[in-house]
Length: 268
Image (cartoon, rainbow, N blue to C red; front, top):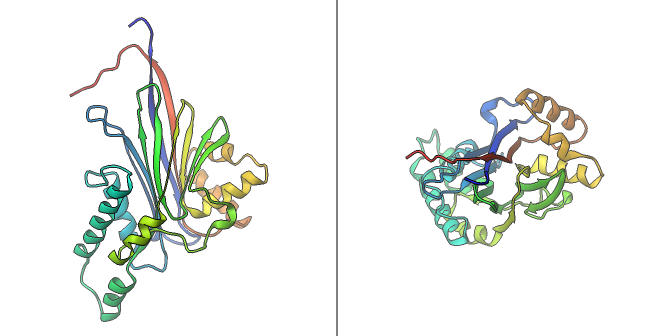
């Protein structure tokens, strides 16, 4: 080859911290990612969800959503119709996967209250090509931040710091909520460059980032520097003492990395 080609990849890491004093098993957020597959054209997938504490078995619901979204039975695309079909399959799987109820009150809560989680799903297309791009769908107040050279260039959904905690939308287990879920979906996309970073965050951290940025502080440098779960845990504790909402905190960070390669080998 006369000139080296630019190969782009995603370097992804997930940080999380349960509420103060809560054990790991009570972390009611969830996050996941799946690498792109150049053989099939499947894009990379990233997802963050936030289960409602008052819901029935939120831990199972968020785990089901994340496992499916990055697995083989997730939505075919992030278009509205494909997401609607996936919501229906998730609701059916929720009922099929129920266990034995310990009493009539638990059974009533399962069917009448059900479970609920905010949802933020993202695909990154064109990795390994000249112009990668992210596409995302959001339902609720989990937020995607696209940062380039330390500056915010895109956000989904377009919430302000004062918008959190006001009846967020989300994915419900009850089929009667499907129309409301579709109405609440928001979509976005943006071109990516080498060095760009995507942050998929649940509400407590998203709100902190928006407030800190509005105050003129370098919040993006702070989260970019996170290099270990222990440092993230310590930092979250400090921010909670300074006023961050004491809720489960989750951050999926995906950086677009690049390198000059002379040959790209795809193993079959």
